[in-house]
Image 1: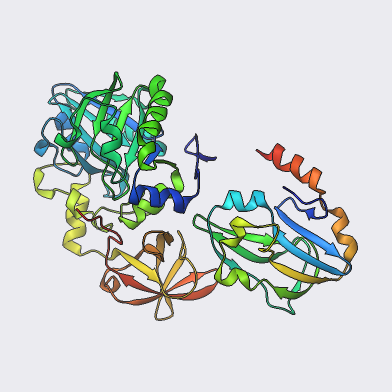
Image 2 (image 1 turned 90 degrees about the horizontal axis):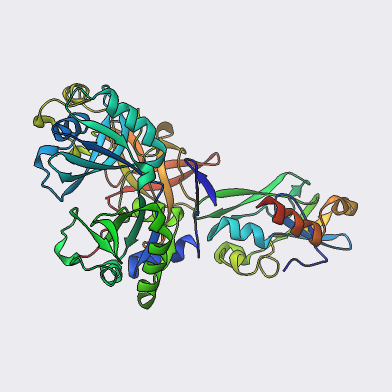
Amino acid sequence: MVDFGGWDMPVQYSGIIDEHNAVRNAVGLFDVSHMGEIEVRGPEAGKLTDFVTTNNVSKLKTGQAHYSGLLYEHGGFVDDILVHKVADDHYFLCVNASNQDKDFEHIRSLNRFDAQVENNGDQYAQLAIQGPKARATLQKLTPVDLSAIKYYWFTDGEVSGTPARIAHTGYTGEDGFEIYVPPAEAVRMWNLVMDAGAEFGIKPAGLGARNTLRLEAKMALYGHEIDASISPLEAGLDWIVKLDKGEFVGREALLKQKQNGLTRGLVGFEMRGRGIGRDGYEVYLDGAPAGWVTSGSPSPTLNKNIGLCYLPLDQAQIGKTIQIMIRNQPVDAVTVETPFYKRAK
Amino acid sequence: MYPENFRYTKEHEWVLVEGDTGTIGITDHAQEELGDIVYVDLPRAGAQIEQGKSLGSVESVKAVSDVYSPVSGEVLEANALLADSPEKLNEDPHGVAWLVKVKLSSPAEAANLMTAAEYQTYIGAEK
């Protein structure tokens, strides 16, 4: 067990590779109750949510969710979050555990609207059921027709008689669901899902597999690909930035960044030499330091050592040979297309 | 689980002393904490290693860890098996997946390491 933002969390159960493969090939169950939940309510809940995030909240329909950025005025990330529209006057934000209090204070400090902001992390436990057999597993436990929930939509229903928010979302690059339930029901839910998935070979999965799965799918992790010093444009997250939606926090800085031209970009690499380029390792181009690795790991699906790094934008192209300093030794890697893994639809 | 004839370090290495030769490895507890092991970096024959100093590293999916030598001496042989099959360290850390054999420079050094019983108490208390 490791301490993760104050939560005691398992890095692994049966082993990262085993758990990773279970999610890619069958189904895995993650306890992600550490994730924070912030709720915004009131007549202008939508306006506040739109003002503090980069994606276009007014485009969300009730029952729909999207990935978004919570930015500082200077354009760096406070956090990356999921915004769920529960009703016109109720938005449900799923945020990173270690950022929850910071996010809450940030949003509240910007609230000049007719809306209330609630820090509700302790009211929800969250389980992620992920993998090609996730739907078949969860369907056994709920009367809600899961096939009717489109990707990045959600329904408030029940799982085995317990009220649950059932979202067709995930952080693995695989099909799957994330359910939000009352904490008192979390252990019972965990056991029910494990039993329901037994016929498919379900495995409990920890933080280690969560990291290798999301990295293969090139999903950003706060503190690695993104943080207060990185803008969504640099992180390749232009698709969650809607500059023409109207005023929002960070917009001016992003416009300026766009005008002046970006200086760095995030690019994927595969190791050619022996070794793993890990988080924080320096990247060299033609013998000179040029960037840094944000995440790196063996990829259990591809059987290669992969990673992501920041490079000067004019160098952040595919097919470039770079060197990663691994314990003071330069080791060759080559930049590649991302995501490293994309599931067959 | 933990052989009685080995001696153990706080950093989870073991050594088996036979005459003036030592065989060094990492413990079952260590491999379990590390998880799936993907690389093992070991010194070449002839290298000098020193008690308490890093002799190489073991890398798992999640992290790289130094291996600290339980004894001092000259490396006689590094386990060639681990170059191609690092996963053996997860399967048999006290047996086929030993790391290096050493010609001991001071065989008495091992006496200041933990016995199997002491080590088991130690890892029990660490949790």
